[in-house]
Image (cartoon, rainbow, N blue to C red):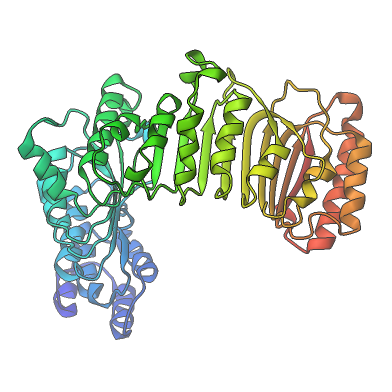
Length: 480
């Protein structure tokens, strides 16, 4: 819409001279940023109705040069006017469809509390006009699966998608015609993240749909690298069993019961970068002597494996076998435990078997330190949440001695006052933490020593800040 038409459409009785002046200034600019445009439209929305504001947007939209938009940034100006959201979408679809490559309709809401309305056909029909969109993310509306398929098959550039899907959607997964339509609609998708509505998030129906959709996607989407359900555990084990052709999947989440079988199918999954394995079920069904070491040796064949995340692994022997066969390539290692599962982690073992690990995360466990952590040269980020039931004191100066550490987060540890003083002394001598950018230490102690440890903790903070010249907020030492 031309500027003079937009201005004629404004109410003649209202005084909008300041807005008219701003419109003229923006029109004179060769281009306008989305931030500037949004701020101006917010100013307009406080004085005008949504029809007038949409007319102004129409007069200025051609000057917008951004390739990423969040429709919610516009629609939240009139939250009760759904027609305004549709009008804005239509404007972008008709004038900027070839320019936009990242399209969002997202608001800030907890997934468990998000119960959005089903998207209207008018909306997804307009979205389908964005032929160059590569990344689509929508949580303000939920889709029926058939509508999502119809929309996506008309978006040839789309390769990343994050949406909400109605768990009551028809899903005839044994129908050959449906399988073909599903594959055609999502054949270019590389990353597929989906979620059920919040009210159904933990329901049996949602978990069933999630598992079914995950398996179906892995089996029938040839370019898929990652598929996940927000808020739900996505076990990919059955899909791996059923996969006959070579997969491009880079992220795999398995039940440990099927890990050996997965290892034996390494030729089907040559692109795996991240492997997450959950031991909760296997802990109740298998002894150390029962797992297949011969098949697990085949994990060495996963040459691209960089990240390994293990949940509730309580067998030291099993961990030894895993690290022996995967550790040479690992850059990220995460060992995670819940309240019902515990195991003492040997840092020396990790240091010796994982020479390239740069990030090590151990959550809720007892830790046995290596006596030569200063040789752990690859380590840049260290995070340990200690088992608070342990009374063992840590050798903090040794734990902080890897020469390339940049980020440290230790929670729930116990330390003597003398060891804390020695740690501070080494920092002053610049023999440890010489590259640290963030240090967060949250120790626990008894009432008698708390005050003394807090004082020494302040000295440690001062020593780090003097040595590194970093922001004060980046360094914290507290004792609870």
